[in-house]
Length: 397
Ligand SMILES: Cc1cc2nc3c(=O)[nH]c(=O)nc-3n(C[C@H](O)[C@H](O)[C@H](O)COP(=O)(O)OP(=O)(O)OC[C@H]3O[C@@H](n4cnc5c(N)ncnc54)[C@H](O)[C@@H]3O)c2cc1C
Image 1 (cartoon, rainbow, N blue to C red):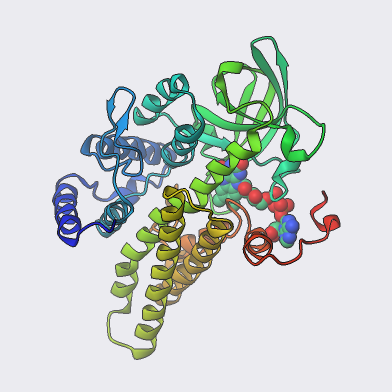
Image 2 (image 1 turned 135 degrees about the horizontal axis):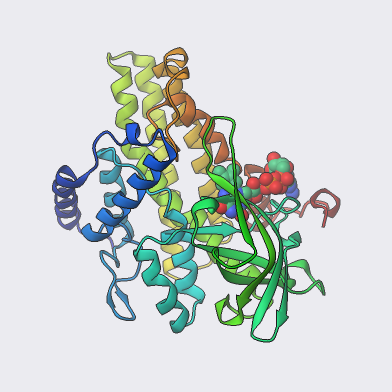
């Protein structure tokens, strides 16, 4: 059911008034140090939770009462994201894996006991990271080698994970491990919820070329994980991981597309005059962003209705990554490269650091994160268009 316009307009005005009173000012300056970034992210998360604006995609009710601001429809969620962008608020970077990837996977797979154990912690600001990729397993994720051996009531985990976003700050980890080498690679995978403070866990930040440290590599050395912290059955890890990836490629991108739409004003401000060529480019970009948003919308609507959505998430991801590059390169073109070059890096950036050079560089990360563009194209070709599968030798399977 489409949500009535009046209702959405009221929501928009309510949030706009709330943001006028609560949105942090001058946050980019705070984020030029790591400590400043962390403090601001934690405070803004708590403020949004208290205001009821941080988790519109959660269900309305949890096991012990209402989730604050949960149960919003897709149209409402978009309004919220657009207004957060319009008010130029910082995006929740420290906790997005917690509220999206972790929560959505828990809603789908966790037992009531596991939900009661983990979901309140997310609301309290616990940080989650995703431990899927490894030095030898990115696109070909199913070939991962981190090993978990069942010993009585716990698993003993040994291995290494790579590119875990915010992993150095995380309290918990969505950990994909191998429990068997028999049969198909996917069938030997199991999904665990790891306490990052457990003995044997080391998270080492990865220093990036532009000065930020968004990722960590994780070293797991005889780490004990209770069987009670397994999500789904042993050997069901691949299916559970698809829920996490769907959230990453669908829900997250609904927010990000809405953010990009809301951030168009930054480009409009740069245009200043009324050069017809630039306005035409801006119009084309706006249309592309709307298309990316519509694709995310369609994918999520299908998922909510329980319909088959083979390849849709890949389409959303591919469209978003391409549009973000176009958006940031236009910002760079209009904003001027030189003036941006010596500005300080804003930690936890994306598309709204205020520095178009940094945003442009970051946009390339989106062509890899959550599955590279090439891999998304393969999925679309094989599963949506039913074209022949690529030769096994290329994927190393
Ligand atoms: C910003 C960002 C955040 C990330 N966050 C996380 C995280 O929190 N947790 C996590 O576990 N991982 C994370 N990752 C890792 C990400 O999932 C992997 O980088 C991605 O899956 C690609 O794997 P890879 O880096 O090993 O590259 P590879 O798989 O080695 O690929 C190298 C190149 O080969 C191409 N290629 C590979 N296979 C094929 C094929 N079959 N057909 C055509 N081309 C192919 C790829 O497109 C790519 O260009 C993140 C990555 C980025 C950039």
